[in-house]
Amino acid sequence: MKYFLTTLLILASMTTKTYSEIKKKIINTLTMSNNYEFRFTQKINKKKETGNCVLLFNRKINCKYDNSDKILISDGKNLIIKNKNSDIPNFYKLKNTTFYKILDKNYLINELNKSNIKNKNGEIFVNLNYQDIGIKVFFDKEKHLLKGWQTIDMYNNSVFTEIKILEINKIIDEDLFDIKKFN
Image (cartoon, rainbow, N blue to C red; front, side):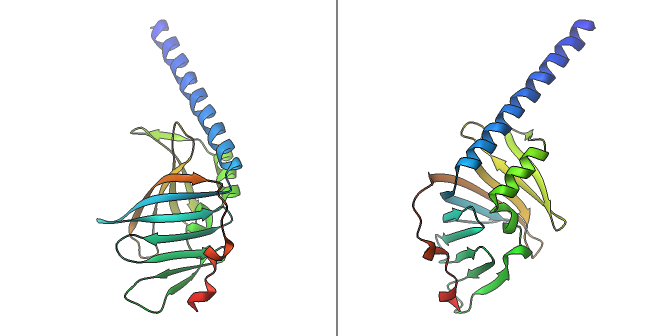
């Protein structure tokens, strides 16, 4: 019995140390990253969409969806979503969306420092909360990069976004995030 308990304690401390090391590497990778270019797969309830995004870690993002010609752009303060079947984009205050925190590198780093990384079914993630909305942020175990997020949208739909990073810290033209051209 003593042997079993000792073995169990050793395994538990090794797991804690391993996740602590992974958390440090994730924080270091985030610290060194200014932007990502990535492919995404987004599932809202049973609907699946794909596309490309450029994320600049000061709450700016520009996404183009593959089959719907939908765009999503944030200039750091506002978010627009424009569909091809409408000439008028939908405008939102970014701080009223979960993107306000997901696109904030310093917030992610601070929350990682405060929180324990979890592992469920081989997925490494941290649970966050913003305006009483749960946000689960996933990270790649080997490369220590942002891997996606799961949350509830403003229409109470479950949204899961998986990303595959194509490039890190590329030179980006700030005009990519200019939403004035949609006014």
